[in-house]
Length: 246
Ligand SMILES: *C/C=C(C)/C=C/C=C(C)/C=C/C1=C(C)CCCC1(C)C
Image (cartoon, rainbow, N blue to C red; front, side, top):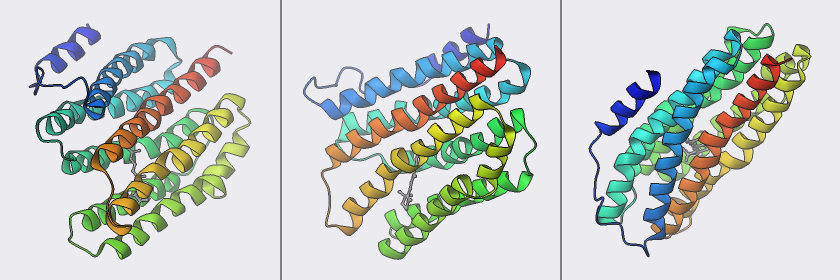
């Protein structure tokens, strides 16, 4: 039933340019691949909720929301790319504005499933992600000069990393004594350091280092989204399954 509702929702979505995908347009192909992978991941995370203990279900729901929201935007983004060959920047930022806070809040949720954790961790991560994105957007949209917007965005990103690496997040993780959560937490932390670095590097090359090939940039962003949304969710799912089975 849940699955049917999901599929019905996806099928009601307008599709673009289905006949126009040029087989040599590898960027367009990457948009289609990630769109399909996001659909599969969304179905997977929602169905897998039934296979984990109750305290893990919210984490899997949030993983499914992230890939579901991204799926919705990819349906449009790939249309913009296939039809116009330009970067779907506005759709990317709308997607980030919803999915990035949900992703970063997963750290709080996986800790909360196994230990006591202060609500302030939630607010710090949530606000940090909003500051990062709002300034990034202002820089890209020309509302603010690109360099100071970039610096503020990076500081907010470093703040989140610091909170997770050495601050409240790290303390709660160490105190939890739960091996499955600690492994997942550490892998997720590497994803938000290495996997997330792709976006500020892309911004830097595009706006501060004299321009970048839009095709290459979108290809890299699409690959990064695959890691940062789908793989990130799988890491959480894996911790949830191993903790539920013990
Ligand atoms: C699924 C989408 C994800 C995980 C997007 C993440 C985006 C970022 C980590 C963006 C970071 C930026 C900065 C650190 C500096 C300012 C420019 C941004 C917004 C590109």
